[in-house]
Length: 314
Ligand SMILES: Nc1nc2c(c(=O)[nH]1)N[C@H]1C(S)=C(S)[C@@H](COP(=O)(O)O)O[C@H]1N2
Ligand SMILES: [Mo]
Image (cartoon, rainbow, N blue to C red; front, top):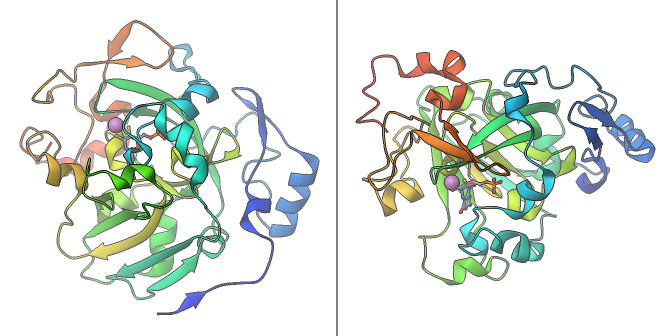
């Protein structure tokens, strides 16, 4: 298999490190801006003020959709590779080494390869996308992500005519991931999308949030974000992206098929067998709010499911 590697600036030095002063203004760090310019990806995050968030998926500044504080986004996590309690990932993910990092892209593509992370990410223009995120457990957050559309990557690797699904695999390394020394889930964690879902412009490969590189607990160095689906679909710390003809087996669907379907679309009308999905609690608030069909992204995604029985295909 071809190894793609280019000498150059380490990824750690070119990842946007803009600081958020308030929810709409980025303030660049001068040194960081210089490195970004040198790397040819200036303008991805730094130097963009008002309007930076006006991409697809921007929430439009509705006061009821305030950004979830950075401290909550980085300390209240699900990442069972680092333990099953919400505080475990932020406590234990410091042991995750994210460089060097290789992502295998294979299966039904014309250009299969093992990509060094830099080479996978660098060709893409990074975008800012603030998304509502809804966990199947009934809590939600609003997170300003940085990354690039998965569609851009898929076009680059040229799916074959047989490709119908995209599978994502998380790192499997019990030395770095203490939760993997326990049998809470079959490792590695695997998730998948239909190809049309993967190509939807909302689907993001995230490399950062709040203008900072992803921390281990949020899925560094690369994770997938699908804002109209429950959080479990968004595999973290991805080492392999495989295109397939047949539907891949996905972790939570294998473990509990009656509770977690392949689709995992947010749907307040279809309850989890053990609890209602009609409402949610935004982290940082006490009141419960109504959960929206497709998590509020129906205009962008509902057409992909026309004619599908969403009670059966949950
Ligand atoms: N590899 C892996 N990916 C994962 C999980 C996990 O346990 N392992 N948890 C999922 C669940 S249930 C949720 S809600 C989101 C949480 O992402 P966050 O902690 O960045 O908010 O990650 C998803 N991705
Ligand atoms: Mo979740």
